[in-house]
Length: 218
Image (cartoon, rainbow, N blue to C red; front, top):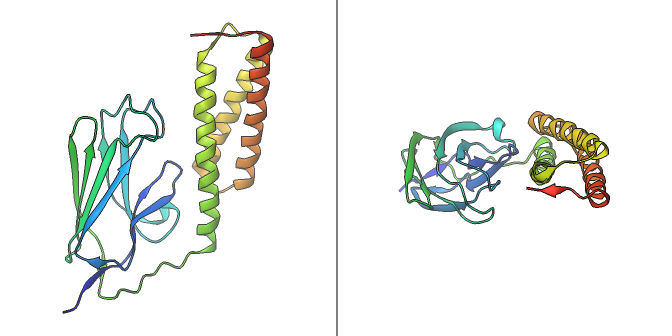
């Protein structure tokens, strides 16, 4: 009996535009085993938008967008703690069913769509040079976003700072804005690393100023 296979990898997009595989190309169909846990990237996050992709490229935007599932009411969840369970099944016909369960309240959102299948189990998964480079960029971008969130929290808690500290704060906001633009552009790793170093230095200066001129926290 001839089998059907998944022609291209099914993945989900990360906040920095990286496509993370969940079912690899060449998988024999039907497939009913998929179940993954997702956590928030920011503890202030109110919802999670899961983008489903089909394709073998590292950059999410280089793959076909199958659809997305938006999960609401996920506030008050700690980073690293699973908040959404994703289940996935694929029929030989190419019928894809995705379910996302909010682990906080049990609500389930579903998405159904058609995907490409193949009569061959040979996967077209050769990694291109630009994919390798983007993977490096995405890792740095993820770290940059963590730095931005951490420094944003620090600045939001600071009140009644002196003029010197206020000047550093303005520079930090400017650099963080530049970092977001570089991450969105998704290509200049060197510039991203330079701005991350700038933010790190400014953060140290701000903390030093706060130590010599104590800041009242809310």
